[in-house]
Image 1 (tube, helix red, strand yellow):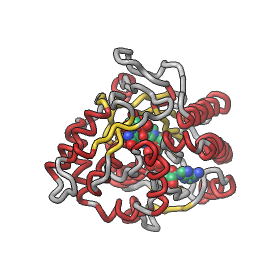
Image 2: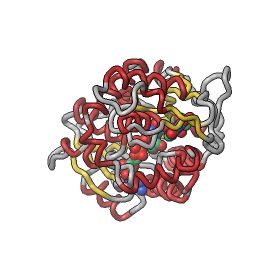
Image 3: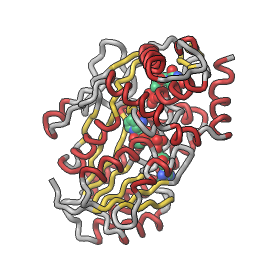
Image 4: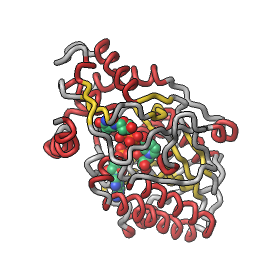
Length: 360
Ligand code: NAD
Ligand code: TYD
């Protein structure tokens, strides 16, 4: 473990996972200072972390990770010792219709951040206890067929969507900066997260919001694609272990050991909503399910073998998918004040562009 107190930069901290990470870190490391850098794209929501922001411990800066002057200033002024890099364009469907933003943020933005941190680290005399954690996805490994062994740290890269390709490129940059310059970089590759503060374009929050509004639930293809679901708090605990206990230059695969086919997941969500939501426009909710045209290039299955992080860093997921989904449904029911403001004209246009033809 590294020395405390730390000055931590969390990029993308107004987004889903990094927002949860800010909450987690603030509660378990109250002596650390946190600076959140987030561009507040459509996916960023200041409300996710607003109650935590205070001048002494947690500050928020709206800005782009690709803005070198801004990042240089933040690193120096706050004497940053640790970076948790999660800012990204993160949605596969958007990467299919508009890949440019994915290259700009995920590839060039990561490059800028690595270069800025390298200069800052060199200026401080290359401290051995500083860290840069680059957070990535299992989607860089490609797609599994039923029965294939799960991905692990030695699985060759085979990205198949523009999103996955951009994340793969950024992973290679992060590892190259460690190998070439000795920068203390760690990489994690994680399976599908779910939980509070998840933007309603991804399958789980989209399904919940659509049920609450009585709108169709689009299931791509025949619904047999499989994802390995990880409760976001478990992921945050894993990121904490990697950042504080991981070995620079090493990669850690993080998974939930919870493989579920999409249609089964949607059916579970429908049952939970029928049980827990007092007023629903359509009941039973499963009547809203619609099988729609498949996502182009849709990866069949993702699964992670998390042996390394369990054996080396003592991490295991603690929340079963049954428990995590129940918590997630309860959270969305209890927090309309968080998600209702997201249902903007831009959001309606996005849904229209994604689903009008598919649902027709
Ligand atoms: P998200 O889309 O919810 O949040 C991304 C955040 O980054 C937003 O707040 C956005 O405003 C910010 N951002 C985007 N471009 C930026 C830029 N140029 N400069 C500064 N901020 C910018 O994403 P998420 O689902 O929380 O994912 C976080 C990270 O974890 C990503 O790197 C993603 O690839 C990775 N990941 C996500 C999952 C998942 O299931 N969601 C799984 C594995 C890995
Ligand atoms: P998503 O939440 O977009 O995550 P990812 O593509 O990164 O895995 O999608 C999860 C799965 O759900 C994926 O197989 C695509 C599918 N899906 C649907 O069937 N309908 C939807 O409306 C969405 C958004 C996704």
